[in-house]
Length: 345
Image (tube, one colour):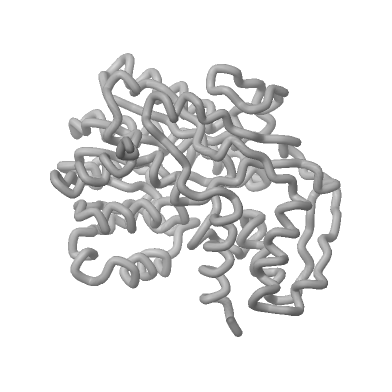
């Protein structure tokens, strides 16, 4: 049997450690990347402003990898909107995994200037600092939101529509800038269009919390779960370990694969009513009262797309990506992780 490409990459990293910068290191995906890299014996610098990231995420990483591994981790507290901070964090870095962003479509509609400043101005600063420091490769987080109003399913990288929100526009602009940086300055870049990534450490609190952690917390507490729309809208929900795999593959993939963007998902769709029922059943195994819960319907939100599903043919062929977690396993692990940490677990 052929060894999976992901296993080959992990073996190569263990044999030859590198020095990595993870922006947004205290965030949901960023902390998962820090955890994986430290577990593979890498040296990691984390950059975070703690605007949306949390120190307890890094504390949780320490609990997973141990104090000895955390000695290979250095935290730079600062904002990617400050170029000098980016330059300071970039010293002697081999690979950058750029995850820092101000997420959420509703947040971007509420405050488009903040989204632009963080997601566009900040990304340009990261690109400038990486090139100036002689970084070998930069992998950055894009988003499925760039497909906008294009009706095709599954979403293919070469066919995008008009952005439906300021957040989507910022991510599309990031892709343009990254492409320019490779062609103009020679910095190897790869963009990853995430499709509704979820999993451990995703923030369940606040007005812009993602649906899966928000619903887990609500079901556990006996609070209402709100669906904006009729529940028929569907998403390609992708467990965080699949996104981590994609980042490592992109970081060590062939030079011929750079200067491109790749979808990161399952190539599957789950509608919101299905998602609610799957979460309800899993939470009810720990909190029996959740078995009787039903969702509440509310008006659709501006900027939300109706359906989203990734084609992963390109990332499979070019980088060797193969999801390790489908929706069933991913939700099971996520619910169990959260319920161990919520009050009265």
